[in-house]
Length: 452
Image (tube, rainbow, N blue to C red; front, side):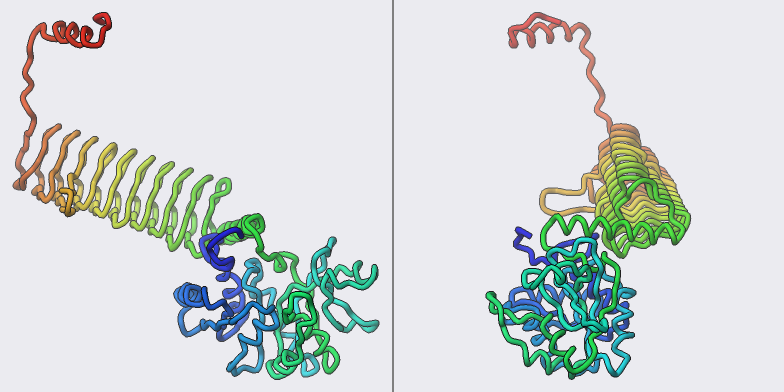
């Protein structure tokens, strides 16, 4: 991966890579998942997965040295009490619970101690082949580099590296493993030959997509593209209209009759209601958009909530802590941070509203600024109900503006305003007839240029 981040914690459609096989296991009915990790990454991996799935469903165990897949499974089952064990790789994000169901069905037969997932490929090069005897019974997994002849090389059924086993039989087979390879590693695939001598090993042919593992960033991008397409397909089935190829991360919720247009990115724990329109190029992160709201093009919303039938954008920025109530409007090039706009309030264009509370039906004119920071602390601006703030006004917090007040254009407000008061804070201009000509001459002379 050429990265300081462990492979299984790389992000894929909004989740760490290891999230997907863990989810598949739980979807398949597994009661508890134990993740085998290195000592360096055990804590981080465990914390992430417990947060996602619940601490009662996840535990971790350390593999002291990376001595192969067989050794990893031995570490994983140490002290574990279970009848049946599912073994998955942490870097196979496309496997689903449906892929794993046949493996559990196979070991219901008393004659079967191990079931493995296999895939039939047009080109099996590089994969371990599933070898069978004349009666069709699985006898062993032969790694690609160890194939003995053309007959074995021509086998197209390959091992996907996913197993369901009876615990007792597997534990005994693991004790027999020997590192008979140049790497000195214990290969889990060797238990197939061991168990096939005393019982049946069942190979269940599954989808080629389940086989796809991630070993580099190219494969990471390939897997993510498939995951995004699966997510889109599910939302389409659920009654969402998608235009183009919006990117919707795992876990995002979208209501019926909502339209998501091209170039949109919905990330994290975002929740979108019904009948919403999210227009092109908008990015929404960990936010809630209520029913009937409209998010216009190229709007960025983070850790915020947008109420029913509210309008945001285009080119608006809702920063963390913003709350827009129903029928509010935040227009083009408006930035809002940790501010609530109550029902019907509007800030239609070119304003900054930070650390504020804007009352119902109030109007914030173009170019208005909530001056919330004194260089050391943030202060709040509170606007009452039905207030009119004229364009190019500055409100220097902390300040309160009472209901129905009128702030005239280009006013600077530094103290509280009573209800229904008019504030005119403009500096009276001084007009000097003819002075502009003298000013041009002085400036042009200083610049060594002719007078315009």
